Amino acid sequence: MPYEWLATAFAVIAGRGIEPHEVMQVLASSRRWVRPAHSPDGLVLRSIWGRTTTGRALIVVVRPVGGFTAKIVGAREMSAEEKEAFQTWETNR
Image 1 (cartoon, rainbow, N blue to C red):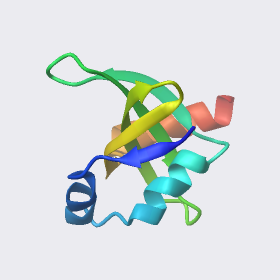
Image 2 (image 1 turned 90 degrees about the vertical axis):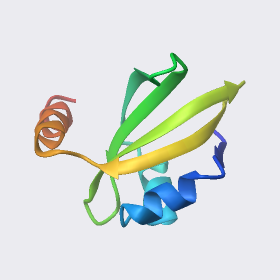
Image 3 (image 1 turned 180 degrees about the horizontal axis):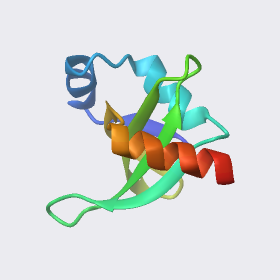
Image 4 (image 1 turned 180 degrees about the vertical axis):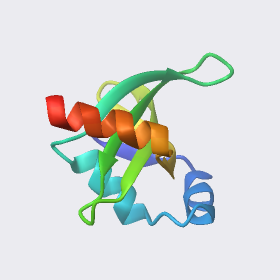
């Protein structure tokens, strides 16, 4: 799937200490958990839960824009509760 960056996404992730290459590692991972999501405005989004090559657990949010293309909206580290759910998914996958 081709990904494009939302113009403000770089500033958002940089403020959270996340590097663009870490976002791309999660998106390219064969062990990612894709979950449906919605913005407060009702836009259809996807949250992609995964790990970087160093094991950092991140959630990357993308917005489908047509065909197989999606815009990267943002990314953040998983909370302890989210990380636990993700580890359970990894184990049972």
